[in-house]
Length: 72
Image 1 (cartoon, rainbow, N blue to C red):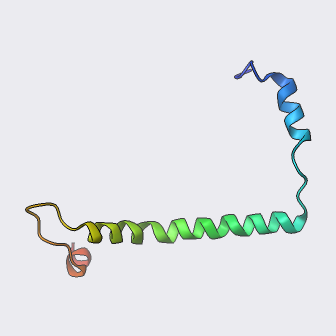
Image 2: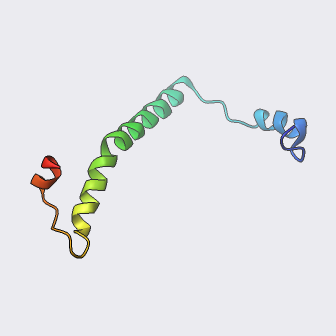
Image 3: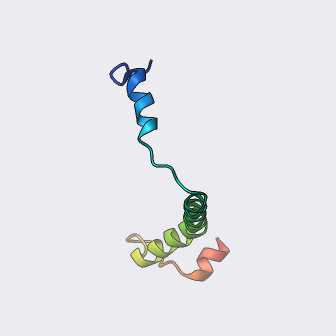
């Protein structure tokens, strides 16, 4: 047992108190998680780029622009 404080009794009683979800609730949760996953996957890079452009360049470096982003 990894957590002897919990013991096997604590683990079995925790399962009894979990609420039963209807099929509709499970589908809504699944859709919510899928939407969240989509937002994280497609929003992470644009957010990082936006924050980088908003902050600006470090002292002594040229200002970032769209052409420098695309050209490398």
